[in-house]
Image (tube, rainbow, N blue to C red; front, side, top):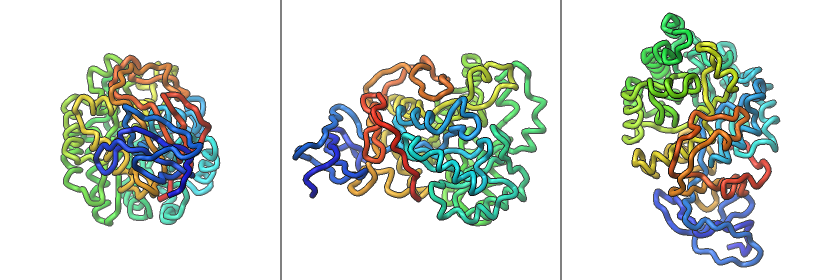
Length: 438
């Protein structure tokens, strides 16, 4: 055993193999070198995690950091700063930028933009188009690529693959997992008559359950036919949960904290277009089913779908208002609050945000507190009560739909690649993120 380490994280209750154990963690060169009762030997720095929980580094599998393009509301630097302040150590970032990340040149540009600027680790999605299936066949060795993103229904940006033959081409060609924004574009267009000007509560009537279910049925059928892995993003309906629970081989799915926390029609009365996103926040009966999916271990992941817009644009008259809300900084406190309220166990939370993303996407050396693994750790105080406020939000957009929302359970420390980037809730270190390896 080496006699000196970069630092020792002492006295924390560490989540190891599904149990909380009070042990010390020695970190050296970005790696967990030793776990146990460790005596200080020379000049090591000590970080005291007494009365805190030490979790494997939390991964947010769905964020939009808007660079290149809309860097007035977010960029890779500001978005990743928000991530680490919220206890997130790694993110999967989306390709619906301007220009879209849908060819090798744009993908490499994004990797270069991230270098030495991102506070957390990162992987980028490659955007699917009806024309780029040859590119999709050759992604296996592409550095920092987590998978392919397919927009089956239109949302922010202009990446859209709406026809069944093109969707089939994308899923059958991709050498990586295909993650899908699953709404049926034809139904979306047919149902535009349900949009009520000035009334954002009509958003879920326009983008209704069948719009989501029809698309999800289609993509699962195609994935099954070709034996391909797909991941359905931000599932919102009772019908989809019942359907997806029958297909657990090649098909995985995720849920957002906001769909587990907010429900219609109340959220639209309280928040107006700040609660507007695609697919929409729906009624309580759907939220109840999402919680059942979490309780029954049917849901695979929780991702924030962090999608910031300026308050100025959000305050326009519906439907001129853009869909999406920030969420990377609030994922951990919202979900810890749900753990404290017995809506899910700590074990289930760690599975959804650490272990399952690593297992399903094949991320190397993350997701567990183990000797030899990367030293990515999220340190939380399960007893801390805090009111989430807009002025805490580090995203350039400067707001959260959860402004004024009280939580119990809060992230206080974020260790990325063996460096304490956030400690005691404050950013103390410069950007240290690296591309994830698969």
